Image 1 (spheres, rainbow, N blue to C red):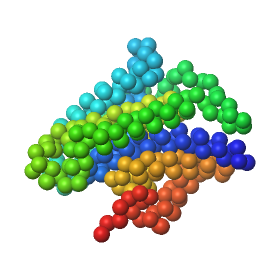
Image 2 (image 1 turned 120 degrees about the horizontal axis):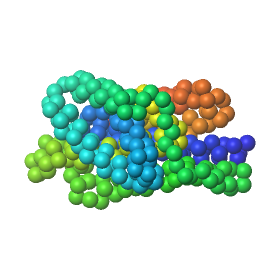
Image 3 (image 1 turned 135 degrees about the vertical axis):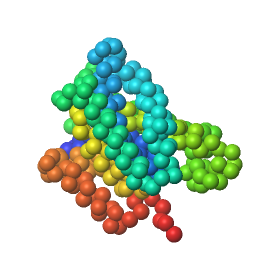
Length: 288
């Protein structure tokens, strides 16, 4: 029984890592800019398709394709910020929501036109299974967990240890004051979308490798991302990480010991239960 629990926890860490990447991308955009970027899930799926294209047409390795696709995604994210969201900076929030809906339709339509409606699994050479006693750790899941940890550490160092990260935190705390201190807020918005989009590309790659990508999958992914955002605490980067892991582990435990049909229900029940006890989220700040 104990070994089965540990097995499901290991599986949940890999899935939770994907949720962390999606939630972190949403956190930096929503928590700092106040934009509910609902197209983020569809963008992640689009990134998965890009990586599949690099693998099939260019013969690249999985992580080589990721290393190329993430900067491309960052540039595309800056393009989205500059030409889609920035023009409605001062408009009511509903305008950004409509734009996000339009971007979702654009990405979904592009996926359908270029790759069709069938599910696609991103092929990887990582098929070995590492065994510790009664616990099996697939090599691919291990690489997903390690890469996710590396990306989270990299983003944390960027935000906390660099001048750019200091400027990002300044804009998050008080945008008008940051502008008065000479910080270019428009440049910071570009950086934020670049970070968010690069993380989304990585998440799409892992979803395609572990499960499958298809038009429409991104919508469910962004719902999970916002669930993690709420669970961990709005605007909290550590909360997004913790919330993603909690949601991922909850899902796998529910699938392993109850039924895979109810894993989403159980996961959201966990979220609701936490919110009843801590409305601000696991690591969110109480608003005074």
